[in-house]
Length: 264
Image 1 (cartoon, helix red, strand yellow):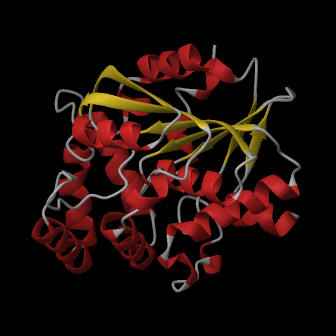
Image 2 (spheres, one colour):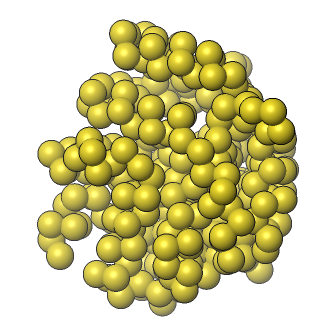
């Protein structure tokens, strides 16, 4: 058990029975939820983790072959829940971890009671009948820049991802988070995140779901959020008054309200 706790740097708060499980997006860690979790601490057992390779997880456990597919992250979380006897959890996932949550439901349908997807994207690349927001050339160029100059990529992309140029401290926090990660792992995880295609998995998600979408998001736009909603049969879709891909940082009150309103 201790190995799993250390591997994912698991933190648990509160004595309530109902588990609320928060999982961060690419380049981030569990600290990104600090403005949202206080709303739910009186009523839920709060569980925070760092994905293997991120934050304060045990990076020596990062297996490049194993983590070449998001399903391995889903398997890690299922293992954590089995180990700690968590059942009927409320799962809150941001960005890539929203898709990880969807994969958890496909793999173990009875584990998640409510699936909250913040800024999800099943595929970032446009094709003939789908607008993911980027061309293949865009993604290839981004990954090439990331490979050649990770710190430069971090400083350039953080303001784009975060938005809110009048609040530079937000982009600064995201850039610092990027820079604290192992560049080699971050490059690999970026390739898995931005070249993946989980569109076909959405139709297999059965759990009640909420898709939370910022009204301005340069990474996963409204069209993507609508696509996720249309392809998860038992889902609701809400657009909140927020700018950027990280509304739990830039608009935590609106994000928490959307979650709380849905759960109530």
